[in-house]
Image (cartoon, rainbow, N blue to C red):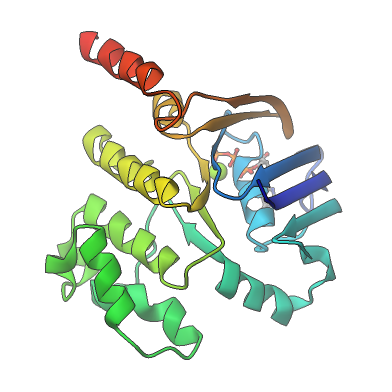
Length: 243
Ligand SMILES: Nc1ncnc2c1ncn2[C@@H]1O[C@H](COP(=O)(O)OP(=O)(O)OP(=O)(O)O)[C@@H](O)[C@H]1O
Ligand SMILES: [Mg+2]
């Protein structure tokens, strides 16, 4: 498979930080992978995601996405890279309150000069929230808001979908639905890098789980994924029902 993301000996020390938030992390992610990053609070998960997104720069080491070394891009190049390659979903949705669901979804497309509403409507339809297209975020449930945020992240067909605790502000059932949605996108070929605290969600939906501790990768496990080994998944699901 084609390599999409490569971190080479990446260290990040924030200004005023005594220890590094990341300490010599190397990682390769292939196209089409659904990878979950797990680890305790403060272990460097968001830092890692932000570096891959080009939202921040490493103190040393290199980050490349789709063959582009992000360190070689200036601020304008980095902004363009984010717009064209990255979809980002956050824990707290960050929808603009004065725009409708559909208008929120269309923002990244409009930044590219694309004024069409067709793909936005299509995505809302696909994510099961076409009926709330004209509602404002205050009138949407948490799960609906996160679906709108996922649609907004997908509007420009990103090479890579990044999600930092996308279920962190949702109840268990709604969180599960959002993870199912990410699983569907993965099965359609979307490469996803997800940060989660929830080991159950990670192992049930992602095919690879990376554990981070004190800014280092301490484990990297490829799991039986739903399409590869249904029996393993069925076993996990039935175990859960027994609890
Ligand atoms: N902007 C910043 N300035 C200074 N220190 C920071 C900054 N962002 C993060 N840190 C520090 O870097 C370390 C890693 O933070 P990071 O946010 O990556 O952790 P995390 O694994 O995402 O944690 P959480 O699970 O709580 O979200 C922590 O010690 C944190 O305090
Ligand atoms: Mg974090």
